[in-house]
Image 1 (cartoon, one colour):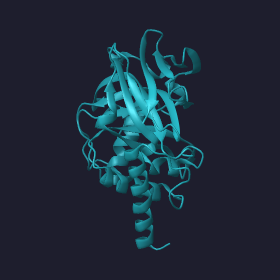
Image 2 (tube, one colour):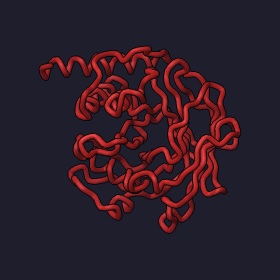
Image 3 (cartoon, rainbow, N blue to C red):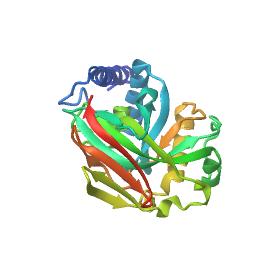
Image 4 (cartoon, rainbow, N blue to C red):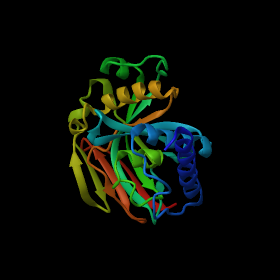
Amino acid sequence: MGKDAMTDEASRIARAFVEARQQGIALPDYPGALPQSLDEAYAIQDAALSYADRPVAGWKVGKINPPINGVDRLVGPIFADAVVMAADAQTDMPMFADGFGAGEAEFLLRIGTAPDPAKPTYTMDEAAALLDAVHVGIEIASSPFPGINTHGAAVTISDFGNNNGLVVGPAVEDWRSVDLNAMPVALDINGETAGEGTAATMLDGPIGAARFLFELMAARGIALAAGQWISSGAVTGVHQVNVGDRVTARFDHSISVECRITAA
C-alpha cells in the first residue's frame, strides 16, 4: 500500500471510530485494514484526534506484552470531558454496551511542569521531577470495537488506546517518599475481588510510565501541558465489566475510589 493510500486508510478508520464514539454505537468489525505497525497505529490515532476536536486532559499508558520491536508500552488520549473527580456522591462512567468495556485500578500522575518537547530522553529522576501529584484512580477502558484487545497493541492504539474515561480519586500523600511500586492494590467488581497486585509488575512502575510518555510524545511532536494526567497502567490487570457494575479500586488498604458503569 502506497503512502497516500495508507494515509487515506488511516483517515477512514479514524473517522469511523470517532463517529461511533460520538453516536455511542458499536463497530462489530474493525473498520478497515488492521494496522501492522505502531507507526501505522499512531497515524490513525493522530487522525482521530484531529477529527474528534476535543481538549485532551491527559494520556493513558498501557503495557505491550510481548513488546513490539523493543517497545513495551502504548499511549492513548484521555479527553477532558471524560475525566471525573470522584466525590462522595455516586460517580457514573460510561462504556460502549455492545463494544468492549473494562475497569482498571491505576496510579494517576499529574504533570506539574510541562516537559521540554525537544528533549528526547529522560532519567527516572528527571521524569519524577516534572510531576506534582499522584492520585489513585480507575481507568475506564472501552471501545466501540468488541475485539479491541484481541488483535494486538496496534489495534488498541488506533482507537485512542482503548480509553473512555478516568475517575480521579484521593491523592497519595507525601508520594515522593512512598514506594508506589510496593503498595498493594486491589480491584473489586460488585463487591467481589477481581484482581490484586502491585505496580512492581508494571515494568519500571508509574514513574517509568511517565518517562515513556515524555519520550514518546517528544518523538511524535505532541506537546504535553502542566495539569494533564498520566494514567500509568493497570496494576491488577484489565477486568471486563458490564453496564450496571460497580467498580472499586483499593490502594494500600486505606485509600479507595469507586464508580458505576453506565451505557454510553
